[in-house]
Image (cartoon, rainbow, N blue to C red; front, side):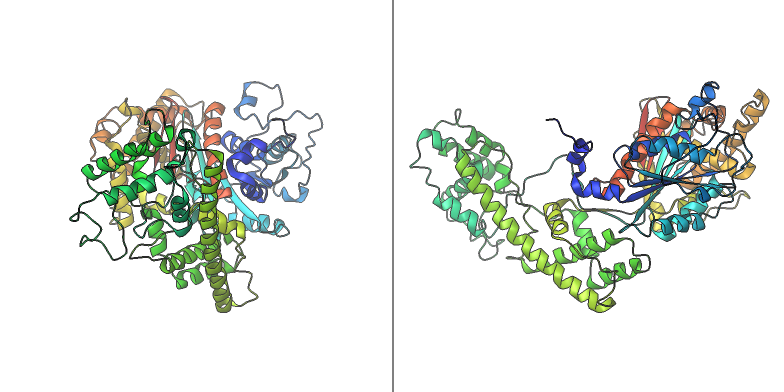
Length: 635
């Protein structure tokens, strides 16, 4: 159906709440390379609130439109104005500190901002030109941007760092971490690239898994909840004609079949078994019992081959006896949640006023924990019902009646969680001061979304990129690496497992190219330039640089814990220097088609972070454009 809303299709993905979050976020791009502008393009088009481009005065000059092939190194950085006067609506001219006013070429930050904002008039743009990205004070830059956003209700920032050399990237990583600002690091080098997410504490309520098991609450040891039991008892299948009989919802069939199956148990098999608590009912446990239960379902059909509802009941018979436990990911979150941890979360974000999503998540987790404690029945706790039932063969009237029963129970559970939330908010406001803005309101919409997704709650925590670098970068003086921490041991174990499942051409396993990229970065840190630069270097210089990269690769593999794996020994450390030579051959050059792939991945992860929906990568995506393959690794 036609619509005048240009965001209609994406609203179907992340809803109105996701679009509001997107519209309230400013994306800060550091270094307007092709990877960075491609990332911004994919965020400007769906309607991010604002962009702010930060680049250096010593960036390569902006080429004239039509000046040659170099224009296409970055499709968003070219000068097509005769007067070289670039204007961006809402841009602050005073923000361009350190630019050369006498230059015939406009600042790259200014040009990129202008052309990106042309893609969507709903997005405002600003830009800052600093003397050098290598010596920039990123703390001051970020503080200035935050001040400009202070008039925006609940301002939110996300930083995209594109192809920054190691030294400024490490500085930016620390500043972003200290301020609790999510950071996406995009790296493009020839046909190889990576996207690294740095986020301290990112809760996900709407993780939206590909498939879920419907929560019909049929295997409750205390029996179905009262309204559902009343509906089942009121359904007289024996008095129905064949048409009605073949359109009874399979949920009702399963519960009636359970009752019939239990009535057929012998006295030695009945519900008085010693492993059951008082008040519990019996469910099929063994394979024989489950087969017997399915036979009971079939026996209730008048013509099983013609009655689709009974076929559905047989196909989903497991829903009647499979115990629904709280997923371990959710249980870990609950175990770590206490009154004190919620107070600590509030105090952590009190100074900046940011992190309201984290505070709401902590409050809702504590409310869920209290709800489970109150609803503990015969030793088992059940989370709030989501109220959804799957499609099934059924007449309209019984299906709507069944839907109403589940919705009513979901509303009751949601009201109980709401009451727990209100109590917690009152308690926390009393602790930190009733007038404190550090305790945000939790809306009914927040509670409803939480209850709908209570089985799929997640939290993503990465370590700072600076910490990863310091752990994995080899020492220049050859000193032994420090003993790995338990966290590092776990990371090394996961990476070693990854080497046991290489790409079909082992040399193209993305993990190996990550090591080669890291070696190139270490080479740059030590030599002040990337291997293979300048681009007019002769063959002898390229060979020397490749040997330099190869000399760095071995200690890097050791610090990551991969030097003794068969895959690394036969490829990176096998004597061929193929990876080092290939990385050197690129000369840190950027190909826009590879940059567009990386920009697509980075922007997708940015949307996940901004909306709080879907689970973002944890924590590094490595792209190998030579073989067209990629991998995700945790470093």
